[in-house]
Length: 221
Image (tube, rainbow, N blue to C red):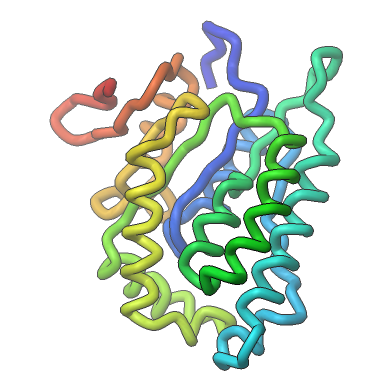
């Protein structure tokens, strides 16, 4: 990757399930010789949540909150550090799902801890938000056929996609690159991947959209 400017030291990749964020984070970490941060997945309450057990949503969400906080707090991103970090999530993702899954009373308790934790964590220099339509994501879910994702309903998937779109429409905490993966496939098509990597290697300021069609690669907002 060309390095004609100072690359971001903390990059986070986000988006709904099966949008390709873990794959892109792995590729970027390899290209940049960066530390890769993989989202915690082991959660003893997740099975009960998927089965609809009472109270399991709060238990599962609070467990994820603590895991993500501890993981990101341990990052060495101080002014003396030369480390580059690529994560496949941002901490705010936890609250996005809390708002979808918790009752108002549960959310009130959750928010007190979330706000305390968030104030102690670094903010990414660049966030890459991967989009896809619910229909595309559903096809990818069926193709992957992961046991932990079989319980994801069409209705819940649509809610998640809408929540992400709303969140990133208002997002201003970092420079932001929005990539719609419905019409590109950087997992199976190398030319799409190379175009995206070239864009990430260039300066990104504010919010930009990756548009590989028609020779226009990014539009500022």
